[in-house]
Length: 124
Picture 1 (cartoon, rainbow, N blue to C red):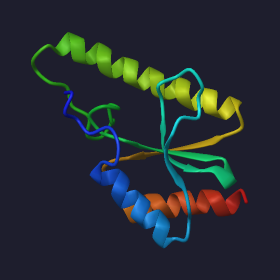
Picture 2 (picture 1 turned 120 degrees about the vertical axis):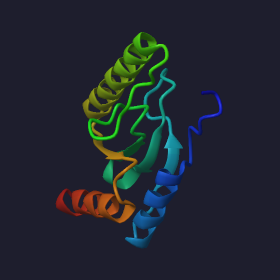
Picture 3 (picture 1 turned 45 degrees about the vertical axis):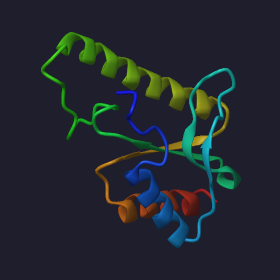
Picture 4 (picture 1 turned 90 degrees about the horizontal axis):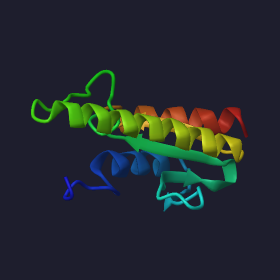
């Protein structure tokens, strides 16, 4: 699992390209929570918008998430902790005035970018 990409995964890159085509400018992998080893995948600082691209396995997608057959108890606990950490991160960012958008890796990049763009336009 150490070889698992943590940044600039294919779904992240696809979303970033789609956002750029929409005319949005952003920063990447920004740590917005002090004292936490958590970074935001895409940050639109001007709009105070944090965008996360969540992998279906690691974030337990209700549609595509799976559990390995080996060591099932470990993986259930691990994925539950991941979901809990995601909720905590969202709560902490919102408390600091950030808006949070989570995109699943299985979402089409153009659809996700359109959703982010709508968010930006509605709240600008």
